[in-house]
Length: 163
Ligand code: DLZ
Image (tube, rainbow, N blue to C red; front, side):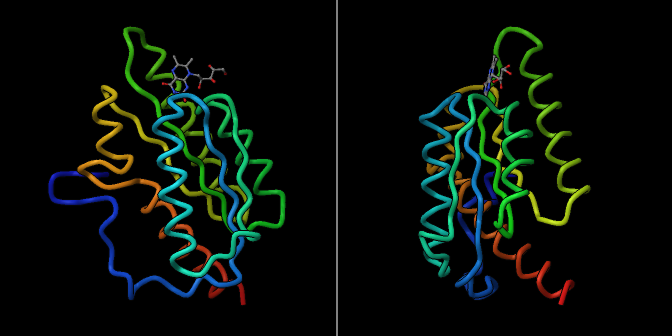
């Protein structure tokens, strides 16, 4: 979570393993595309920075965050080493926000726990658009950067434990 003391793009570059040869699937929701596009770009830039090759990144879009569950499930069945799920849900006037956030979060958590590949949680849930902008390359950094670093670390962990 981003706070005034924790910028999503701040990390110790030396703590990140070499990602050359890692394959990453990214599923991106089209809702709030201005935000999810910026999160995707942050993730791509960080994956490249650590050595992931363009041909080893598979990006697919889904209509909304709720569809990230199905998209990530199918992506995990391909030859990728980890899946990043990117979405943005912004609170509206109805309880819909809570249902989408809870459903998507529980679906991704269940997927993470029930198959062998790491699933990285790139869902931003905010009260308004400004809070989302702050976390998509704004004053609190870019959650896409955090997701990419997490994916690399989890792939390295998976390889270490499954040697
Ligand atoms: C319906 C809906 C609403 C109200 N808000 C969002 C949102 O803020 N972010 C998002 O990613 N998706 C939203 N959706 C769409 C749902 O995630 C889903 O695509 C539809 O309910 C169809 O299953």
